[in-house]
Image 1 (spheres, helix red, strand yellow):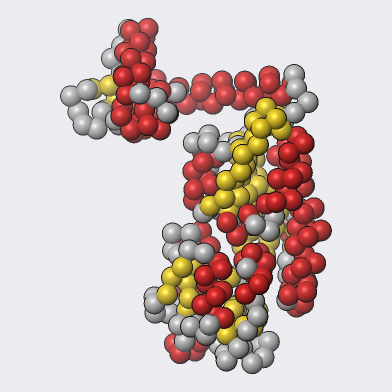
Image 2 (image 1 turned 135 degrees about the vertical axis):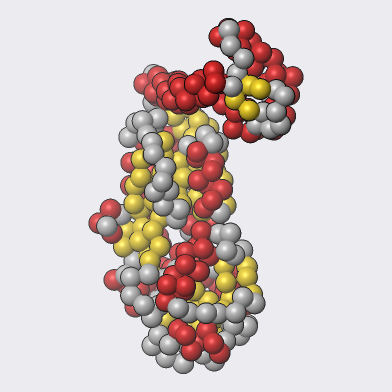
Length: 312
């Protein structure tokens, strides 16, 4: 594991920081490994460190070995215990405050120790791949990543948020005319939802000046409510900042089929049927708590908010 961290970072100090070890401990581990194998693994004359031929071969075989060792330890622990020893869950910000509390409450009885982290989709995905998180609920599709179990829990449409002065009716406005005449308040392009919206606007040929950009849903909705512009969001975003939905109109996105999906992801084979059970719990919370609230806020969303694998 230490060798893989150094080969990825190209620097022992950075690898030590990532592993929570001292630089000297990392250096000693690499020396011991080289002594055991009778081969030099790094060309220390290069900066960043470069793998030797022996190091390249070891890197090719080491990752599956480390992965298998971690998986085996988890499976053995679970076989001898009624509860998971530790579970680290990550949920994207737009779902954390709506879905998170009830889901975490349900999981407390199934784990000895539970930690919860909210944040951007990119951070959640990185946490899962770096083994800092065990389960994540994310809008990142992670299509290019192997070795993951995926459970679809939600498909939701994008909607337009218009201040009262622009949203006199429930009809969707002409998107190009709207973008040309009024400011689009954007989610940050470094967020998954912001990047997805930008890609779709480009596909539609909609050009909106980049004037206002925010990280948080409540800030975005507060700006729309204040009449500073219009925005694109999803129903879960509305629930996250439901207290701000007054003085604005929620209307359908003009182009059909523009949706966001949330999946639960776990590393394959590490937690038995727990990921499936957590995905089922998430769907139950969405049906029991989120869907009724959405129907009150935006009645026309009734048929467009699909929960669970049936949403495929």
